[in-house]
Image (cartoon, rainbow, N blue to C red; front, side):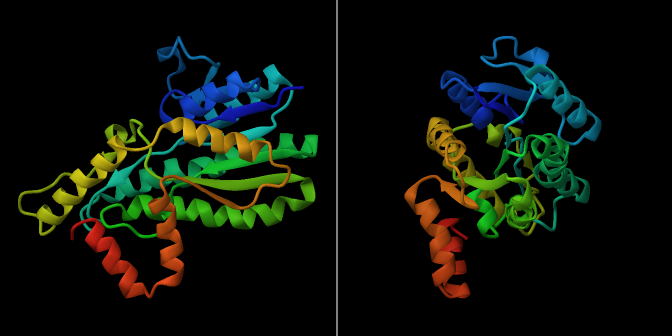
Amino acid sequence: MAKVILITGGSSGIGKSVGEFLTEKGFQVYGTSRTPNNYPNSKFPLVALDVADVVTIKTAVAEVISKAGRLDVLINNAGAGITGPIEEIPEEEIKRNFETNFFGPLNVIKAVLPQMRKQQSGLVINITSIAGYMGLPFRGVYSASKGALELITEAYRMELKPFNIEMTNVAPGDFATNIAAGRYHAPVKENSPYKTSYGNTLTLMDEHVNSGQDPKIMANAILKVITTTHPKGHYKVGETMQKFSIVLKRILPDKVYERLLMNHYKL
């Protein structure tokens, strides 16, 4: 029997690539979008879901279970970027980012767990970010929201062991997707003390995404996790140097690592 997979944020970017790849591999895939009718050519069915709206989460999960009869894998992929000097980002934008990147995934997990317990099996894959392993300049809020999801997954894994439900993080580096276009950018203000440093960093970040790797690499990594009997807690997918940056943080003195990051971002 083909595993039933639900992917949040399945209409574009990594979610779309992963959904199409897994559909080709014979899985029964459902994706989500806030506006599924806008994607009539999707290669897998999309259900309406807004991760910031608990009612839509519960409705979407119930719809998938009603249609498929079960739910084997949740891929918490929906997310949003945010950039800016932390001092200048409006508080409501910070909260909105945590709603999407942290509280949203948690609420989707809560919605699927009763079914997975009933089946006595299930897998939750949280798509985090290599940025969640370190506080990056002018991406601090994004780093914090993804880092929070990384840590809570570690706790959740232990709580779910008695129910034969697995949970893991897959942290991508930069991939060529539309995340930069959908990201909240705090404006570069003429009178801001951060004008030069933030402006330069913003240009650099967009270049990294535009020259990022093919999302199919991420799709292959997700397939490997799904077909692993007992996945480990953390997976990193990206260019060698991006993954190595996590190792460097573990072994280098704080100030040395901080200087490396500042040099990278030309600060």
